[in-house]
Length: 132
Image (cartoon, rainbow, N blue to C red):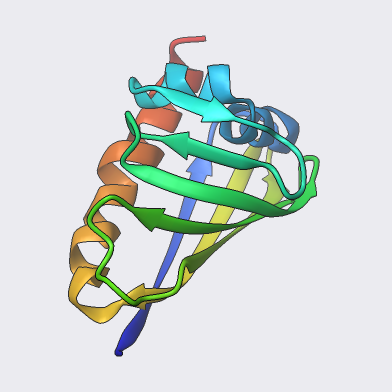
C-alpha cells in the first residue's frame, strides 16, 4: 500500500466559529456542498456526505479551532485503512485561514482528491459565505 498527503490552505470570508459550524453541522454542510450530508456532530459520531460518497467519523472537535476525522469514499481501494483529515482554523483579519492536511490517502487517488477538495469543498464554502 502506498499513501500520499494533501495539504491545502484557503482563506474564507467568515469567522472561525462560522466555518467550523458550516463543516460540522450536517444541515449547513449539505447547504454549502449542494449534496446530502447526515450524521452526528460529536466526537465519535459518524457522518456521510456527498450523497453517500464520503463516510467519516469525527475524532477531534474543537469549536472554531480544529476538526479531525477519518475519511473514506465509496471508491476506496479494498484493504486500505481510512485516511485522516485535519482542519485547523485561525482568525486572519476578520476572516478564517483554513489549513487542511489529508493524510494516509491511497497514492493513486491523491491527484483526484486534491482537485475534489477545491471543487467540492473550498470553492462552495467560499460561495456559501459570500451569498450570506
